Length: 286
Image 1 (cartoon, helix red, strand yellow):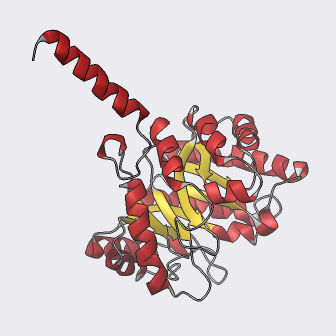
Image 2 (image 1 turned 90 degrees about the horizontal axis):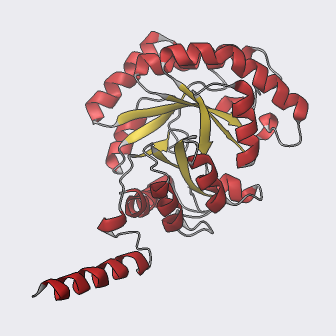
């Protein structure tokens, strides 16, 4: 092959690469993310047994609940931290991150004791050697159309961020707010350790467009982890275009955990649904 023919073939291959349809299984576009699941979705919240179950279904990690309704400081106590560390080591499944789902019932915007919860979760995250704590803002904690609530949250986060920064922990907001509203809160708080826990399903359910929000937040490197979720359907059988989501995450150079949540069709058991969810998610995250 002469030089001219070689250049022509190279150009042809390049054109094919850049115009080919996106294939979620294509090695040329693959960027692998570690795959975990929320302990509450695995029906083992605040329970070290979650790690062996996660291993059984092929997960890399677990997102742990910091507390529960019956035990508001579960992961703050050293004996429970040690139990989780030992269970993770024995199973070979990592502790991916923490989450305070109880903030949906006892909101940061209205309950002063939740400041202690968040402060304790920073200590727990440090002890468990993880970098992210999810702060939930749904149900009673929903911030939509609540400017007074947002102001309280901003002031409470301002008081917490110096500790998070010192400990190297990221606090991550998950809510029904738009990407721009998340940006507004982050800018008002003014800390590099406050980011967004992005859930495309939540965004779509709230009337936002995840396919434009991911690039907007990603340009500022503000997405620290993502949830892979459908409501009332297996992952990949709902309305979210997950291959497109994966492509957008690739484009913003996302490097965090992808965590399965929900994705339970009516009538299916956990043992029926979650191996299928893991199998599908592997095609998306690698």
